[in-house]
Image 1 (cartoon, one colour):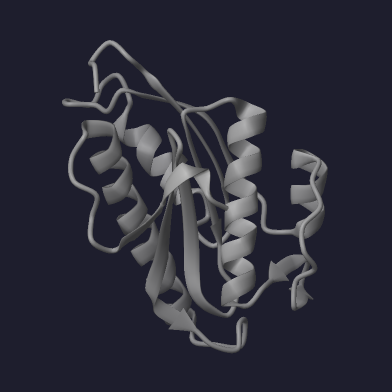
Image 2 (cartoon, helix red, strand yellow):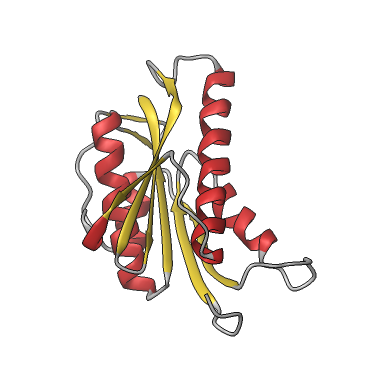
Length: 174
């Protein structure tokens, strides 16, 4: 990509606790050597269906459970929610790159949209019976998702090869 073009970015995150957006912001700060050409427009932590629906003015599928206001989907539900949120965020914010994360039971899902492509990252770390599980499993799943998503973001921004752990859905599928 051209050095003169600054890409715009926004995320709505749940299980990644805004660490993807904040991590990208740190990599694009003006004082960083070899900084990435990205302007972070918004990084939102929205763990509840209510907050998502109010802020983004959309309706989400009903989760399997609500625990202290936090949505809990199964793995398929997480994928659907991440796809919906990344699409709506990209449309509403008009950004070049949008990211959404969702995880409850099973593997965590991160959906990233860039240009006309949709990229899916699923963690290998699974959490069963959320939230009644070992906290360390939850932390490992989050760290894996953040690390993999930042690797993908760097690859896309710098024009490098897409990492093998990424599923690519062409034509904005989802």
